[in-house]
Image 1 (spheres, helix red, strand yellow):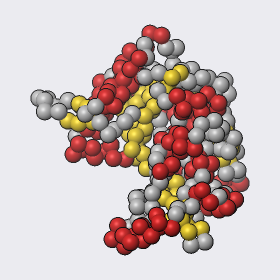
Image 2 (cartoon, rainbow, N blue to C red):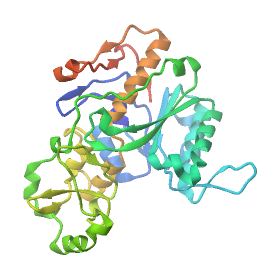
Image 3 (cartoon, rainbow, N blue to C red):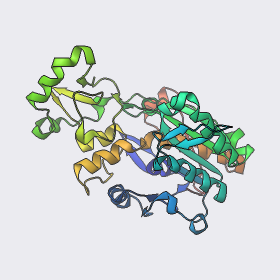
Image 4 (spheres, rainbow, N blue to C red):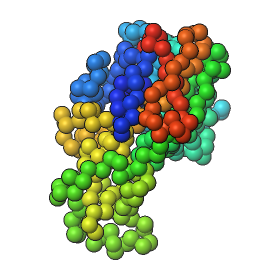
Amino acid sequence: MDLGIIGGFSFLDCNYPRTAFDIVYAVDNDAYCTKIYNANFDHKCEIKDVRDIEPSHMPDFDILIGGFPCQSFSISAQNPPRLGYKDERGMLFFEMVKLLKEKQPRAFIAENVKGLLSANNKQAFPMILKEFSEAGYYVQYFLVNASKFGVPQKRERVIIIGFRDEADKDNFAFSHFIPKASVLGDVIDKNEDLNEALFFSEKAVAGMLAVREKMNKGRAQDLTQPCNTISAHLAKVSLNSTDPVLMVGGRYRRFSCREAARIQSFPDSFVLDLVSAGRQYKAIGNAVPPVMMWHIANSLQCAFDKTDGQRPTRVIPYPSDYRQAGIQGYLFEEEASYGV
């Protein structure tokens, strides 16, 4: 989310310019993810549990961004029903709400899996929206597919956006930017076909084939289409699961770390190899596609631009085939500056 919201990177020959946003504060409780983060951003991330954040010690900021675990939400038997949690992970949502109540930033962006919409017999999500609303925000949400933004992955996620002021809410117009479609074949490295460590053993393949017809396993991907969703357990990807894999010369193989990062739309300049492959896979699989986030941030900037009466936005120089298709994007003038 951080790379996407500040921009200043290229992916598949398309430039995603620097935005008006700057990161002023970042925390993560995973030391390995933090190591990757700090190698790629000027502003350094702190290793900290979000429950230990003291709002009074935070700098002021315009936007709060983040994700929260959805596995832990439950509806407890209370009258009226309240949003509960099964374990400590469920508390993290309340930490985000607490920060919004105490700091009252101009807006927030929260990301979560599609399953959040139906969690707890569809009771949890309305309560989540209610909590955000009661923190003082006009709240809206979108179910987005990363492949609609030029990401070579069919990754569906819920994006919740809230505005403190009605003017920003009224000026916000979000829609899919649909540039030239990116497909899996655009990001696969043929050199990795020589890496025997990425291929599944004959035993693993035989076990999968024994149950393939009735269990729909061994999901080799079509290189001419976006990839199915990749997950945080890519290091332990299995043929006996829904994990996407490749078929090369009649053999199944995993994605390399760099291929997985490209599937998520990270530029090759993004440093990953400071930690083990397993830690890289986890960080990549848990990430939000930067290209998708950049488009969300771009729409947010346009709303702020209109509210603040900044100079007119300028058209982003997409490649010629995008312009010929009538695709346009908008970016703030450089004088604008916002803290995230």
